Length: 371
Image (cartoon, rainbow, N blue to C red; front, side, top):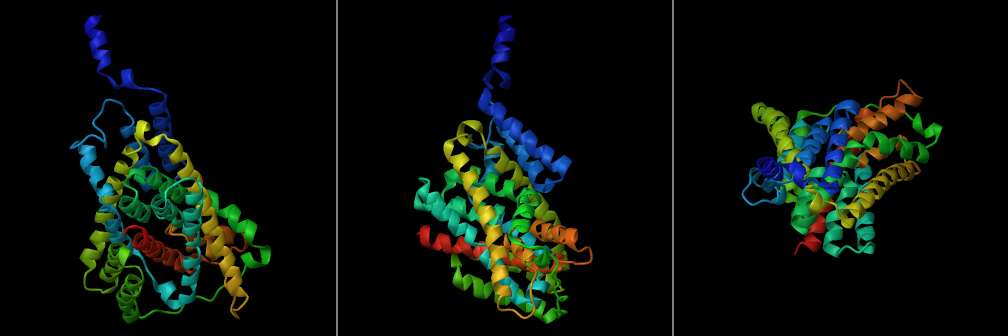
């Protein structure tokens, strides 16, 4: 019996308390959403399993120096993983619709209002200015950018910020449709847009080069993210580096996604994560995502006051950076009102513009607050 008691004392069961149990349940919930509901399974399953892994007491987790999980988490703490994700995104993204109709980039810019609204809200809720800057980026619904900025400005908040950002990215199909329907009427939802014009290969090659130069001059703080995004796209569009583009858009981004999701999830160790500030961050994240969706739609309606050829205001919701899920949501909602109206390609323009816009916003915040 004495030996059994000593053995029991070495198990995780002996150290388990209600806080760890709560986090384990949350991790299992994330896994369930990914498998059953298929909400961003490539993100939620690694993150969910990481949450479970990080909340088994008496293990060598993220916060134990030189442990395996601590080493894997270095990519989050240092901001290494986000640029690699952006490289993969660039290598798999087609900017043709945005090049064809550049005014739709304004919708991606308008949706970034959620970032600055959250920045103000965070300050009012008691966070410091620097912490508010890190929290605000959740409004872009861009997980890699959120990790990148928070690792620079507020490393102690990387865990809750990353979990909030990825959670709302995964819940796009639940959050956005009610807002779209609330802010548009039946006539606006069936507006049909002209097919985008054909884009030449020269335009596709010039876009990442010119796009990088323009955006990095505005926001040099985000040069790593923007550089990797446009470099990945140049690999894809140049036509002479297909092997590199395929590696970046498949094997590389898959490996980084696994490591990123697992290590972010494991960082939610209950005694570190379960705090009032984490709850505040989740509330702010939800509000910012709703604001970003709403401002994109409302700005599209404003643009229609001055345009002869009207745009479907629903595509403004895809101005957030959740690529391509926001564009798919717009297509799905539009399909409910007109089965022959195909909005996906049009929605992809503000969607990819939102990715660029969130990186620029992160660079601006980093420039002001990271000195």
